[in-house]
Image (cartoon, rainbow, N blue to C red; front, side, top):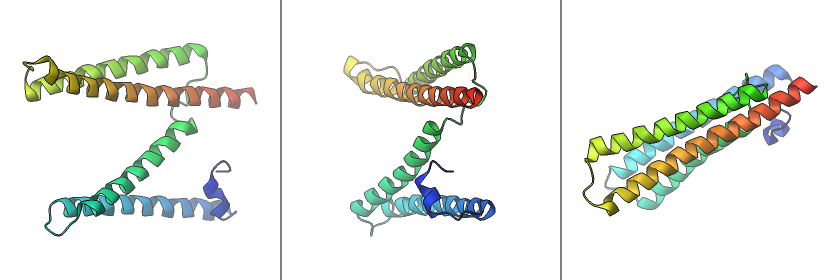
Length: 157
């Protein structure tokens, strides 16, 4: 916990620190749930304004993005990757998962909307599918790279 800016505000006692982190995590989940409910109520009622709904969605997006970014950059996802061979194997698995996900997205689009009759009607769904698959690959690869570096540093010490 020493590498986080949050550690400056937490107690030095390990038990108290762990309990406070639980409380903070619980409050973040409750806040995310309330923001989601607020967005639903705002969008399906006559009294909500679009500005407040947008603000709630941005707040909810920030919570999710922050947690995801911290998880990816922490290097804790791939704890078993300690050798170059295992790193290469996981990298290939990430590429395969991303490609399969891309194929599934395209297949789902075709099953839901049917085969497009015009080339311009297929461009947006295909580009979206490629972007999502690339984002999935980028996130997983970044997490793998950080995990491998962290695991190597731990083994070198």
